[in-house]
Image (tube, rainbow, N blue to C red; front, side, top):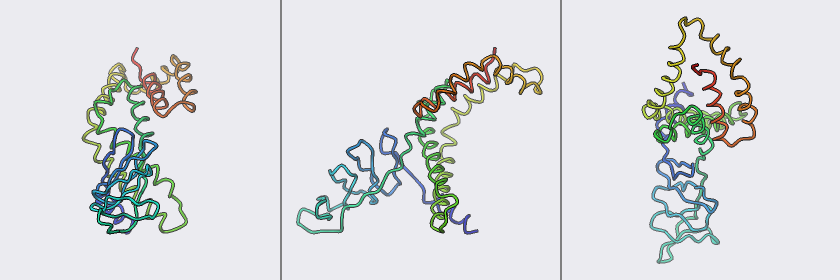
Length: 232
């Protein structure tokens, strides 16, 4: 029951928005602050004022002067309030590029489904983060894992409607292959036959996957899938 409660809590709390096309996302209620490396940090304040130190620090609204050396925020009347804050953004760029690559390999124009790809990328990234806490030795590890899983499930559900078009394109791709088969029991034999015919091409794609970029990895996996279900 505790696990279920934590998952539901995560579903309620988790909501991200993308900072830019740079592949970073922050939770609603926080503020994206650009860093000098081109990525973003998440200011843990709503309507936070981003500092220009290039590290993603921020100050509360109404206290826009970032005094980084003295670790404090102030207004223009020298009233001080706390110290500048910063937190890391969720970096989903690798997952986004991987999914985009798979779409390219399958011949699916994922640029038509940007919302779908962003939400699915965030979901995959959260699941990967959660996996790092699996089998943790402390209760905190387990709580963090459950919260990340909850957030990932929410974004997976959010992308479902937006991904319908891309999913339908994929289904049509497989349906065309199945439609060429007179006996559905021959399904696996047709795949094996394609492996025999296109095996060399598939292997060339496979052996280059480890050294390629994330988009390249996805593209090559997509190409391998097209060879498996190719209609002759």
